[in-house]
Image (cartoon, rainbow, N blue to C red; front, side, top):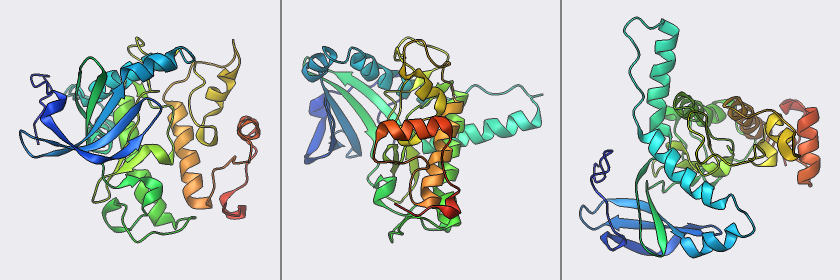
Length: 289
């Protein structure tokens, strides 16, 4: 499918899409629909961002408009091919570059954006398999398939999820992008079970900080790196970079293998304190939640 070339030469309007009646998902200021592009018959995920809702939320959360613009910015950055390495590049560097290039297949692709008076529109590839938690791993080909397997997962099934996640991060990090909010809800699946990383609004662009959030305290407590948590208070914590994603990946791996996140408690505050103290238990000694 090449309905929307990378050069931005095709700018659709909302009338070019036939939207399904039922939404795929909804947030505070946006709704996602399955939508058919009338010119080709191809099916996409159309995210509609309500400008009025964003404006209302911005009164209480000033950074929300930045998050919307960051989603567009990061989507376009990640769609840009990585530059080729010089011919005399070290073998290890060349191998890493190959993994990063292949990892683009595991990053949810933002194909085009447009707007009208009332809304912003983001056209994504359709990931009809839902979130990671909605389906389970099968051993063949690193894909995630039915039937559902309860947590904790066997090692081969957890590895089937972690391999594409790590490849996606290699791609994002090579583009200078830290995700900062990796969690099972942001790992989506295609219809045939290929895992892709999604949700770029709170990413950090390490090369162009125009739309980066003003705070480094970003993420979900169960999976946040300690350096993110250190930024809860004004003047605390070091700047966050791509290494925070490696911590979050480890927390996801722990969840898959142990049945619960490593620092999980009934209180977000206590969870964050346990994370800062690294107060967890080896997976083999953990009772799944």
